Amino acid sequence: MSVTHEFRPGLEFDVASLERYLAQHLPGFQRPLRIHQFAGGQSNPTYRLDALNASYVLRRKPPGVLLPSAHAVDREYRVMHALATHTEFPVAKPLLLCEDPTVIGTAFSVMQYVDGRIFWDPALPELSPEVRQSVFGQMVETLADLHAIDYRQIGLADYGRPEGYVARQVGRWSKQYAVDAEAAGRIPAMEQLIEWLPKHAPAQEPAPSLVHGDYRLDNMMFNVDASRVVAVLDWELSTLGDPIADFAYHLMMYRMPSGGVRGLQGIDLKELGIPAEKEYVARYCARLGLEGLPDLEYYMAFCLFRLAGICHGIAGRVQRGTAVSPEAKNYAAQVAPLAELALKTALRA
View 1 (cartoon, one colour):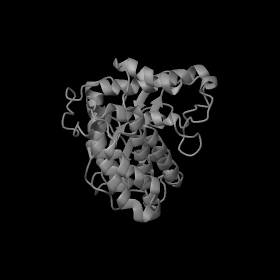
View 2 (cartoon, one colour; view 1 turned 90 degrees about the vertical axis):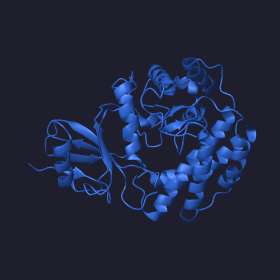
View 3 (cartoon, helix red, strand yellow; view 1 turned 90 degrees about the horizontal axis):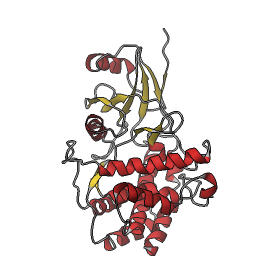
View 4 (cartoon, one colour; view 1 turned 180 degrees about the vertical axis):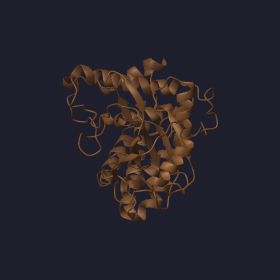
């Protein structure tokens, strides 16, 4: 039988070696494999594995020289395993973690394949106003539910340092900006933010929670009629930290233009059946029993800076030739606009 595999250039691996490993370590696995690489996965290349009797998803570290704390497939595996084992939170069930780079060239994890729909544009042009309203409700309530989980009770008490999340993130992305500046270029607004953010941090942090770190529409999977979230994806940036920062990162979609990095700015939300930003914030607060979100504008500036930092890192990978996604150049082009929007937000905070 002829079996074809679809890899993007430079991201191929030894399929026979993977088959031998899975046959030994994944209960019920039956050869042969057919492999298709997904279009997403800016950081960790992601593949669909179709075996004789079941389908799986493989996430791997990309090849090449990597930062020590980046592309953490082991952390993804740990948090997903904790959620799948101890909660009802929608996440694909992780099945195995392989940290031996001799199998396919880099460490990887394998999880259960979840069948569902992923939406890329928050305006949701393919849906009716009623379904859009439902999707937005599910998005915000699912994130609130994540923040309500007692991470200690599910074995994640040491998953990160709970306090000082924003300060650490500002420091991390400031340092990362400096690392990538030679390859990706210097951005004046980023350098102003690097000075402004530490000086204007909120005086008091909220109680820490498990945070996703990259919670957005295209990191979620819905069932066929979009009535239920079946899986939250891409946990590479998850840790313990500030839930308001995590929510503000998600809320950025309201502040960003509809071109480039997909956003809702300039769109008639009422006509589309999408809740206004204030309504969305209120629904998050109601789900968690909060009266409001102090310092939200600071958090928005911080999150826009952080996203600009992520895109700046992608720009660096584009210049170094290690970017793994065909969308990488589009993300790289957003660094300056995002940084300038972050700076404007900061000066209004």
